[in-house]
Image (cartoon, rainbow, N blue to C red; front, side, top):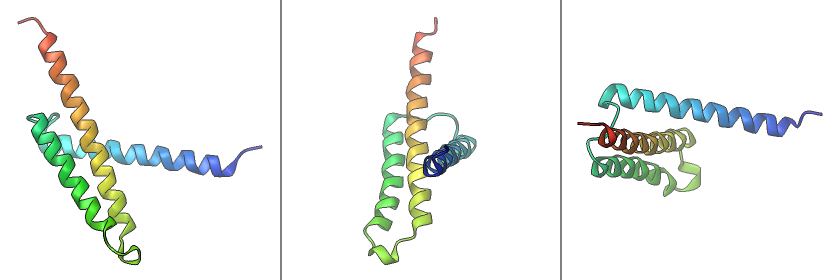
Length: 97
């Protein structure tokens, strides 16, 4: 028998990962495939986290759940772009001159 709750959870996880992927694609189109530095990565992640915090610190009945979700997706996308930056930088350093 199919566990309907698990099926719904799995579908929501897949949709969330698709949303994060779309946000990464958008960020890459707008700002390029990598951050200029880890300082920039940190600043972008911190900015997105601060925007999430602004919603979280509101009274619960005043919070915009869609905005919180959007900000967390941007945090995730920014963090992944940071990882991509590290991997590309590492690969470039291994290339022969």
